[in-house]
Length: 295
Image (cartoon, rainbow, N blue to C red; front, side, top):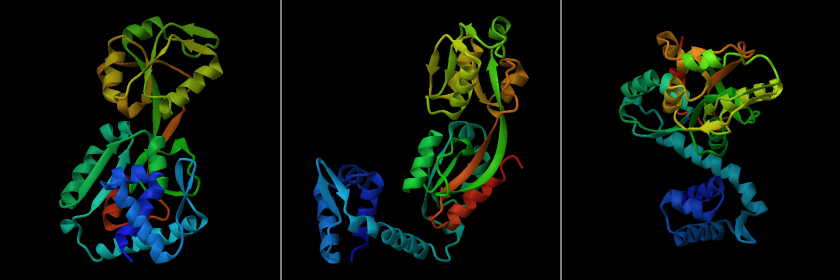
């Protein structure tokens, strides 16, 4: 039995279809179809069936998934048996929340590359919910994100890194005009500048506004924390971020904090991986370095 056929089968399951699997593997559609046909012939079972326009797993296919996971994990362990990290030539796929990546992870990355110079680190700045989902489907080896998003039950193993406080910040000029975010039932004509709707910071602050019946002018959605801060510094609006992301700006006076009743609100950064994932030496190194952040 060809190992690559098993891997192709597993990627199809991960990606949710033949077309996306072919793109990820850089195969033609006919190659994917051929390999699955060969696997079905060797196992004497049908793995997929067409329902409407989609190819979905049969019951036999669903039953095969955990066995394939076990085989691929065993092969991964075998390939890296007794490998020394300094000569490692493996890959590590890591998704990281942007604020953590920008402000907390650089020392980890420096130490990781120093200790495992031959490793290939595929690093991606991602939304925390996407990180969670990719960990649960096997798209990432490790995620560094905020535990507060929830939704992973016992499927993920998480290692706490640090708990951080939050801050509502604005330019000194904006704070002079709009400093009351505690009195309920207000309309405050200032924009809220933040990430997309699935940003955990945005969700926390928007829930606060809802509970207080405070209406802001509108929301400006941006992907870059640095750009968000620059706009806030230039009197465009307000933002709500982890305090560590704005601490230097607060110290310099380019941003100031606006009091809220969220002063005790915190978020917890964690490293996570799927509970069934074999923790390779590379993963152990990266997880260990992350656990030392701010200690």
